[in-house]
Image (tube, rainbow, N blue to C red):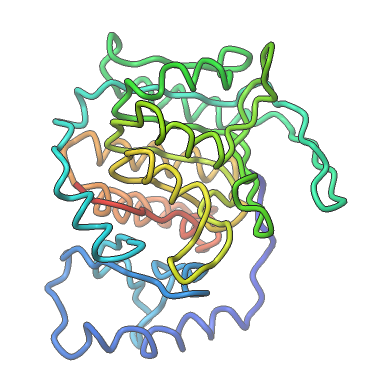
Length: 302
């Protein structure tokens, strides 16, 4: 998590150009404003922030329709057929923020050092304050360990990890979100480890939020994006909230607080995200889409 680079003029024009190119399936008979729009991206379209597409009048796509991403219609129907977890505000939650950062092994000749994230810590505390205390566990610093998360995640209905993330396209199973290391582990919650949960007791989460950089990335394939989001869905999560690029620590903390306020009030997750983006965009310092358009919801909205 860090401030993303400034946007050049060309992407603005591209966002306008993509709108008429990609919306014909709904343009002929557009759904009513506010209707959930499910997007099943193909190939490189998984990298496109659909929420930031701009129509002829300068309006944002996500202001018209809340967006939900799905690997396929069959996967979405399978998730929707699963039992609902209950009222969001009463779900059991595990919230981890700003863990003591572990060392990262060199990958493809690239050495990375993970800096502390004070915004992620504030984010975790703010979200935990919105939830029912007896049913909420907040982990900060050394307490936000891989061992603790692995032990407790299968019993949680909300799993929120506010930390660093790194995606590897060459080896998507090595992609990870960082947690604190402890005796016997390296602190990296990798795709491999999450897929291991699927082979054991699995997850019961209504929502997994990976509030970190690049958590929606991985390797593009004919079956969609292979990475953390797919791994958590396979492990049993109903929905995963992930990012498409390196995100701002401060902006993300505010976006997540806004999202959880809407989600916990009983709205569906896609609408909650769209409303959070709209609210954040009204704050002058975060008006640019690089601050609010990185996150996407994959799975079921409710």
